[in-house]
Structure formats: C-alpha cells, structure tokens
Image (cartoon, rainbow, N blue to C red; front, side):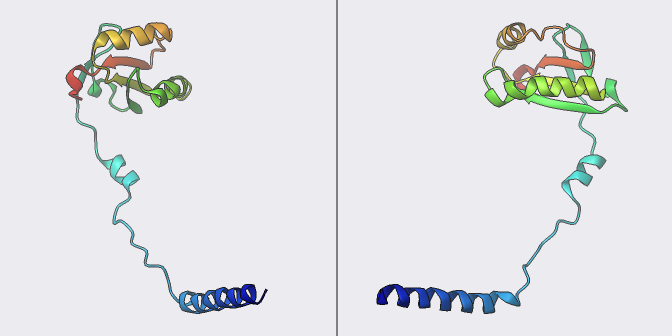
Length: 136
C-alpha cells in the first residue's frame, strides 16, 4: 500500500512538472509555401497516347478541357479491383473521363480480367488501356 502511494506521488509530480514545462510552449509548425493541391491545379500532365481496349488510339490532349481521372491499376491488385467499380460509377455520374491504365505484365491478363468482370465495353467516359512496357 505504501509503495503504491509513493509510486502515485512520483507519477503525479512528474505530470505536474511536465504540464508546467509544456504549458507555455507553442508547437513549431512549418508550412509549405504552396499546397500540393494548388500545385496540381497549375501543372498539366504530359501528353501521351494510349490504345483503349476498344481498339482506338487516344491522346490525353483529346480530352482537353474535361476533368480526367487517371488510374493506374492491375488485375492482381486487390485494392485496385475493389476501387475500379467505384471509379467507374463516379466517372458515369460526374461526367468525368476515367482512363484506367493497366500495369499488368501482358495485355492478355488485362483482357481476361475485364472479361471476367464484364467490363469489356464500359461507359462512354471510361477507357481501359494496357500501359505497354509501363511507359506512361
């Protein structure tokens, strides 16, 4: 019992001293000169071409003036698979262009996945493409 009282007194004293020490101190906050969001608004993505699974070749610049959601995914990636239907729904409902670039090792893996998920001919705002040699 006496040991518990001594231990309690030590902890209470340390807490009191720590409170006095930190009470008057202000946290040292460092802020970035420009927020990442502002940087994204002012920097354009470099133009690139891709062949969609519909067989047509597009360039990013073909969609100039539209909101584009560029998604890198793979058929073996569980989070990618889970988010893909949500991204497609957002593209359809918000009139956003979704360019979903597969980073699968080969195009056959992407095609097999799209067929299994019944995504071969998605909405007009959704484009699936294989990122050949992962160049994009």
